[in-house]
Image 1 (cartoon, one colour):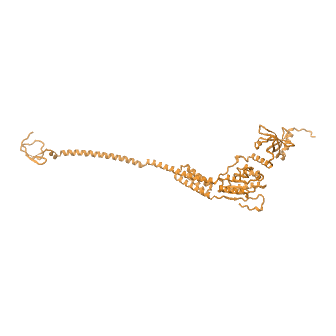
Image 2 (cartoon, rainbow over the protein chains, first blue to last red):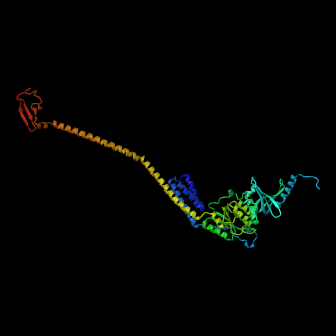
Image 3 (cartoon, rainbow over the protein chains, first blue to last red):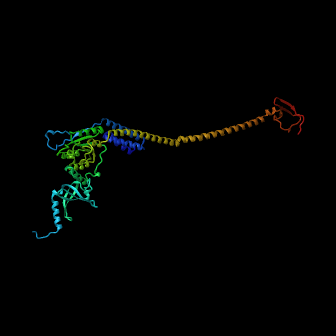
Length: 89
Length: 401
């Protein structure tokens, strides 16, 4: 694999395996752009393509399973209020 | 009686200083009818304001005049805010105005306008200071009441549009005298949370008094100084608060604020689908390119292959071989012809065939040699005549030379 492609593939793989959904979609866009630029070696083109498909699968899976995470800061009440002490995080 | 005389200029300066030292005169509202409006070339606006009892000269310098929503008009009832001082040249007490408002809109509105102008002068509404929102936020902070429908609506919008975010509520009261401080605290608390990408400052609809906390100067300055972009969604579409002016982005409602903070999941799904299609098309094209290259190379390789050289050689060899065979054949056939001729000749020379044509060979019986002349021959010599079929014995009777 040629060196510049290898470096990019490394970052895409990191996005695929450890990145957030945003990282994965950004990596997917970048993979598509790379493949569309062309001029790749055969093995590189196939590796990049496979990674792109994996990224798209990952994004779709994330889309299917996404759930809003909600939390709440415990604020010191502006005025002392003994009836409302336990505002959970 | 004072025995000494003082210059008028000195007196004017003294009176002016007296006036300017008085705090109650440096921040004052007056209300009355506008008259004698004069717009100078310089951009300053001079006018008077009067009621039943008195009249006051006012000046609105160019810098302040340009910030007014509307300039004073003759006959208009107006409220004017400013500082009182003396203009020595005319010996006139003047109001150096910074806000001119149509009268009768209430003190709160006047204060609002005054604050708005001051904050605008301080650059808090400067469009160049407004930051773009992150395209894909990960953590969204929300400053609003934990109890109202607003918090519920914001969660619903985010869940529907973009459920990838984490939402952190900094609960606050949004109404009443404690609200400004509570809102400021909530904004600070959220800025202390790591990786908050954007903050929504929201409140449901209400009367102008209900929204007062969002017209508070401390709230405005906290929003301005906030380390992450702030989106406001306060009241209804028609409500504009100071916080809306300062915010990086103002949404007409809390739900709209939530919508503006996140992309739409269906857009993302579309983009992923597009990406798949482009990916397939690109790899097919790439493979075609590579295959074309391979074919081209194969063709070029074939043109230069040792096989091809051998073929040429082989052709040359077979040509040589053909020519050699042809030559050999020619040679053989000419030999054969020659041989045939020789054989014919030989055959012609063979004695038997001569004899068969009627010739005879004559032998000298004494020597046994064939005779080719009469030399040595005498009558009476015994000779033999050899014919094609059979022999004759004879005796020489006469010799002629």
